[in-house]
Length: 225
Image 1 (spheres, rainbow, N blue to C red):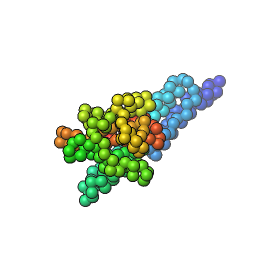
Image 2 (cartoon, one colour; image 1 turned 45 degrees about the horizontal axis):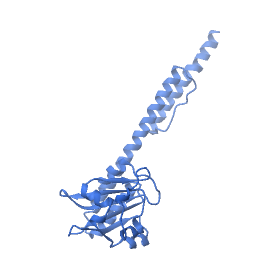
Image 3 (tube, rainbow, N blue to C red; image 1 turned 90 degrees about the vertical axis):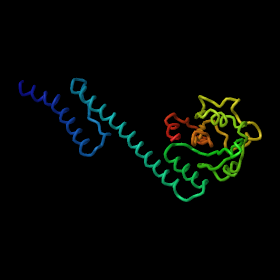
Image 4 (cartoon, rainbow, N blue to C red; image 1 turned 180 degrees about the vertical axis):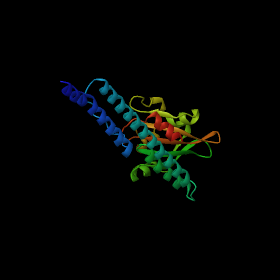
């Protein structure tokens, strides 16, 4: 009976513990936080294994966030380097916008500049557009006071986000003939004022016209950078 009890005890306690130790060694050797220990009971050993697996889950989540932050940092560094090259303003802006699409999951970007007279918005550069779409938008000018949401973002110096749950109010929509610009028709978009030396000089607009996905608040923070 004593021998049978000791054998049973080994199976109940020792084997799960050894399995946990082996899993810990695998994680340590391979730095693979997706590995999980096998739970075989609901006793104290099972609770220990649950705690160990939960710890791995939290580390894995943190690892994903850290890797994404490093990726974003590298992309931003490349952006700053690209902006120092001897390119035209439009070429620089286009390169920055194309790179920004690699940092955040956004369908399209476009930049509007305030003309020197301070009364009109002019489309300068874009990324994610088809050739026909950009032809519709290239060179387009909109009187600032007719800019709807863009004018509000410019005047108040704040980012504005619109999507299915927060639709664009009728008062902030573009009026004809500017509303006929098919290239900028979308339901999920953001407008961010570009500030230089304390004053607004233009607008960065981003949208998810094709995917229709909502633009998250953390995406807004990154776009402002």
